[in-house]
Image 1 (spheres, helix red, strand yellow):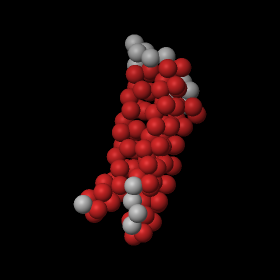
Image 2 (cartoon, rainbow, N blue to C red; image 1 turned 90 degrees about the horizontal axis):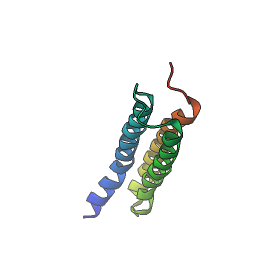
Image 3 (cartoon, rainbow, N blue to C red; image 1 turned 30 degrees about the horizontal axis):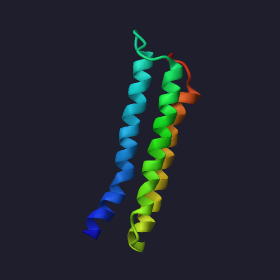
Amino acid sequence: MERGRDILALVAPGLVWAVHFVLIYALISAACAPRALFGMGTVWIAGLILTVLALALTLWPLRLTHAQSVHRALVWSSGIFSAAILADGAFLFLFQTCGG
């Protein structure tokens, strides 16, 4: 049972990043569509909430595992995917228009 929890803890940051990636780009696509389903203000707020939530979920598995062999790999995995989540979320604020 302990091994299954460790594997889930190692896989969770990657899954959280993948879901965050899809949701951020879905928000951007919805705001930049010809019909503009959302305004950019709504996209920024939703993106910020999604990014903070994703960061929390990416770092949460660090609390779940107590095995030293898995903990080191989990620190690296959580760190790398947290950086990827921040990079995805940064697109909302660095590129504030739909053009180009």
